[in-house]
Image (cartoon, rainbow, N blue to C red; front, side):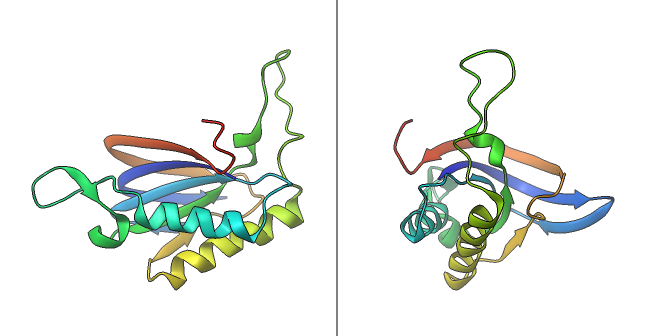
Amino acid sequence: MRLVVQRVSRAKVTVDDRVTGEIGAGLVVLIGISPEDTAAEVTWAADKIVNLRIFEDGDGKMNASLLESGGEVLLVSQFTLYGDARKGRRPSFIRAARGEVAEALYEGVETALTGAGVTCATGEFGASMDVELINQGPVTILLDSEKTF
């Protein structure tokens, strides 16, 4: 599982001019799922998202988590995080999970986040989406459950 985590002051996703998810301060999380991912990666992802210390604490240091800051999450599926463009000019997406597998794990992450007490908005799985955000900081963190980076 791969995550692009961006700290934002606000964000929203639209599909066909319809807002499917919108948040104030918190995190936009782009999530890519591989065929090897399981419930263990769902747990890993949710734990990282809610506990990653990338918000300012009372001393102005980047030392507080999403839970401590009271922020929200906008979770957006993005199979292109598994795009491989090392050869040629057209990326290969064979390392991305098929739709039905990926959707179930994506929904599992959403469920785990709301279960942790976080307000979680989403995009629309499998749709062409427009994602608007104000990256606050800017702070962008790349995470990979296989620890390849």
